[in-house]
Image 1 (cartoon, rainbow over the protein chains, first blue to last red):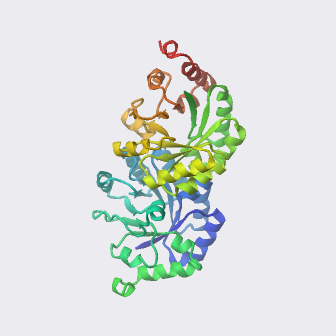
Image 2: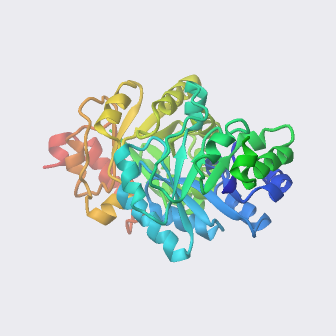
Image 3: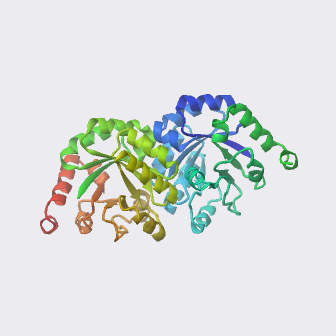
Amino acid sequence: MNIQLALDRLSIEEALSIADRVEPYIDWIEVGTSLIKEFGMESVRLLKEAFPHIMIVADCKTFDNAVYEFELCFSAGADVATVLGTAPAVSIEACMETAKKHGKQVMVDLLNASEEQIQMCSQFEEAILCSHVSKDEQEMRGQKGRLHIPSFSNRLAMAGGISIDSFCEIKKHSPYVAIIGSSITKADDPALAAKTFYEMAKQQKEKACE
Amino acid sequence: MNIQLALDRLSIEEALSIADRVEPYIDWIEVGTSLIKEFGMESVRLLKEAFPHIMIVADCKTFDNAVYEFELCFSAGADVATVLGTAPAVSIEACMETAKKHGKQVMVDLLNASEEQIQMCSQFEEAILCSHVSKDEQEMRGQKGRLHIPSFSNRLAMAGGISIDSFCEIKKHSPYVAIIGSSITKADDPALAAKTFYEMAKQQKEKACE
């Protein structure tokens, strides 16, 4: 399992500082949608520059203009870029092709996708499929931790309000990527929080979640 | 009818320059998703600074984290911000509330929304509903000009490959906003192209499209 640190609602300086403190305990760094929309590709560029050895995920949530947006992300240094599962199929296909051309990866965010859309996305065998409870749904409906898990993905990511308390539940699904945001970035001690997730992730199942 | 100039796949300097040349013939300026993702809110800020008297639409295509993203757009000077019709209902509601709080407007992009989602969005009477054929769909499927028009919106926007040739067809639907991108920005003479749309839009129906 890879632990992806999601950096959102931060300045670039704050994002760099948190990533620096938790770096030993994380596998991937996500430049969150809010950073991209606030600061543009500069946010991706600076994170990759600071952490060239770590996988950088640009959470650009592409919905149209797929080639252009994915080229932007990969040029800025991203190793993975995201597309919405509710986007037109042609756009998702274009993301897959653009990533393949660059030797990079695609994560499809399944937030609010229909069963039909999830089935369609699952045909892209190289894609990472991200089961995601949105921030707004967590806050408005108190759905923290309730995730719809597609059963057919061999490259599953899980995101949305994952906490130390809910992490054993997440681990049961053996995701390829567990995406963790504010449980690390807003912790009193982000490094300690990240270390706790790291140790739980790396330990054998029976030991981690007894 | 308002003519909204969509600025995409340009540097900020190019966007400012084109907007400056066509300004007499347009009503609204859209800072396109590609500008926002490449340059962040600086793109919105600079366009509003240069054209304080023109309505600025931030095409942020919000899908989650709605309050935060809409606050970013409005703080940067946007008069309208966009949310995807495929987003969770709670996010669209949060956009409506945030816009109301700031005395601003919401445009809901109906691209790839289901009938059910379009019905749901139509309940937001203050929202501008945007019927939209995506760039990727136009290019991959040759759907230029084919738009699904919701019959129940009193604040209809139309977007996607609108050309001088297809403009009479658009005009028949009496949209509140017609969104025009590359037919102006990629014209040999953007000002002449914009002036042509402007005159067609302002003339009475029978005169414009004989």
